[in-house]
Image (cartoon, rainbow, N blue to C red; front, top):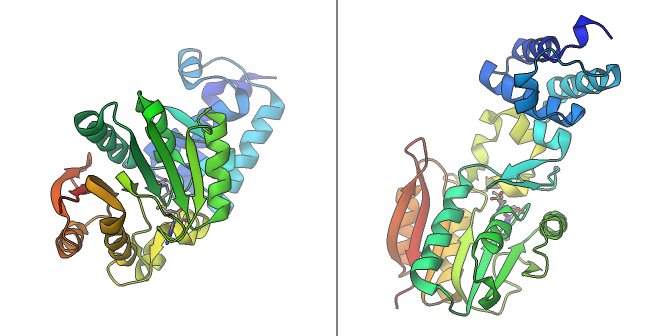
Length: 295
Ligand SMILES: C[S@@+](CC[C@H](N)C(=O)[O-])C[C@H]1O[C@@H](n2cnc3c(N)ncnc32)[C@H](O)[C@@H]1O
């Protein structure tokens, strides 16, 4: 080993390789840190504190291979290492499931508030429609504390996604709490629910060519795209079915795409649900819509 094995040099070189392939500096630094942690097992905190620490040749080789793959095939870093984080927990991810996004944590936090304010220690049913990696339902099953009285369900049209979600639930020791169901929206589901949450596909298909290659090429098409002009076709059917599947006074919480809140409000009114509130994300964009079944 020599000076070139010091973490500070490896990190600097890797970042400049990524920025050279037109990845923004801040993003490149984040990605390199994730990959460095992965190949060395050294935490980011430790290599920032000890930048002169040396890493092994085979770890450098592994890092270079991953960076090359990242650049050449535009594979998202989370798929390269098969890991993503959501509400502080680690989830297995691969191209069968959407990579959990931080915005979806708002949906989880709102659902927890609704539970605490309205259903605390009551026997209720909660379902996540389009569960993907299972991040939303797992976070709910973990953080809703009196969960003995709650039945958690998760549905997805994709059996591949459900396999990943079950694996994640097992890893988080939540598999006994959640029932997974393969279903096109509520088609295979008889029960009614007090809380329905969903982050359905909402990118208009016509925007596919404008999307980053990392997303458009690697994340599952069924998780990303709605087939209509405005990206609301799945919401339209989901809201209609939710009206039937919500118990009296039950809540529907939806994550929505940028610029969709007016259209979603219209769908909520049309289906005789009451709009309760709209939550903005950190970029001040309407992100979560909450409605209630009062009739
Ligand atoms: C945007 S992803 C969300 C995944 C995960 N809930 C999350 O927030 O990371 C949408 C998910 O909905 C599923 N999906 C798409 N159409 C569906 C349908 N008609 N019925 C049930 N699930 C559907 C996709 O397979 C995908 O897993």
